[in-house]
Image (cartoon, rainbow, N blue to C red; front, side):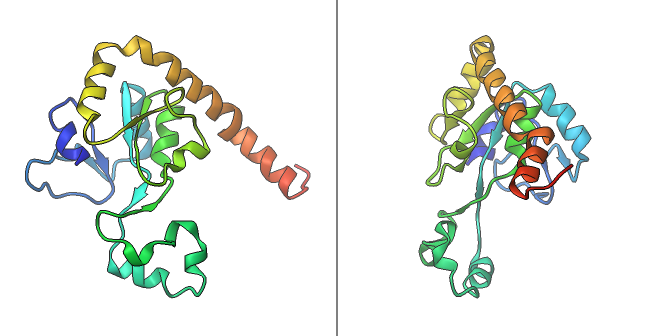
Length: 179
């Protein structure tokens, strides 16, 4: 649904595998593009749309069910009820690529909302759903200055908590290692 909405805007859609265009969906602007080029594009973009979901099929579901304790993992607790409209959570790097490149994150609101483990809604990112995505994109385009504090807060949190230095410090402390 998101692809059908963004086709009416000036967009960049990079993908690792989605190469066909079905119906009225937007066409990819790049396939298997190097990260350096993607990051350059993100830095020039007012906003980045992220979806922290993985849409699994019967093969994925079957593979997951091979583990005896799969239902103990909250992400898979409802796997017997999953269809193409019921995804599982997946934290994607696109979120952090957007934040570290100072692009406003528009995150799809979903059942899991795992983004909230790392960032605060409305102060460090904006939720969207298919009903309001076009409206939010228009507002960001027309009133970008009011979103700059959100971008800055997300960036500051990411640098402080999720950058290389803080990650290494966490690993060393957790494992009681000396650098």
